[in-house]
Image (cartoon, rainbow, N blue to C red; front, side, top):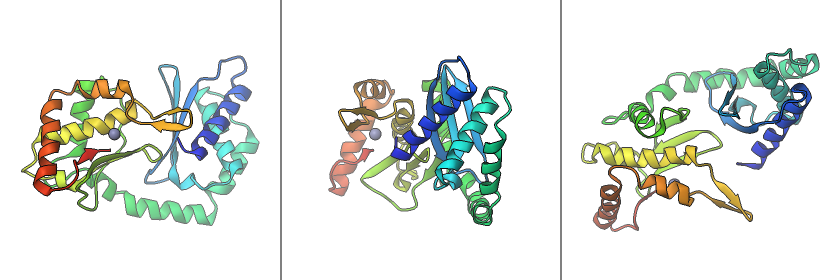
Length: 243
Ligand SMILES: [Zn+2]
């Protein structure tokens, strides 16, 4: 979690304390999301609150972030949001610079985002759905799924938590690569959504024991490890990996 995100979570906690009266403040996870337009979402699941804010607002001033927190928390609690926050939000959301950014995002993302998950051979959306059903009880929120622009050979997959995006190396979108291997790399990245990085004594741990244990439950885990070794031998590069 970046500094700006923990700052945002603090704003949402504040809004809960103010609007929720005697309710306990839940754990809150806030992410920016590259929506095609201005859109923010808040939902409650198993006692945790998940917030997605349009990344167009990532650089907004603090008072706008606070306004968003109050408006979304009010929505979740079915309350009216304070008028002052509505005003601050509207003034920013309808400013020329934000309208322009929104317009640009819509044009650049609207269609491209939908099609970039579909490669020439493999469709990441389909693979995600299947893995989500088989291994996650359909509990994972779908992130942005996309093939990499360049053919990265060493890093085969990457999860960007701040932007809720999984990128899979274009080198895997190939008939020579078995489907179970592409699934393994995607499964690894999906585990990063389920097991967020843990901060221990100022260090960030991505592959915790719980993460590794669950990774090994993948039906083709051993085959995938051998495939990774083989790829490295063939290309004479250090062992490729899912980051
Ligand atoms: Zn990883």
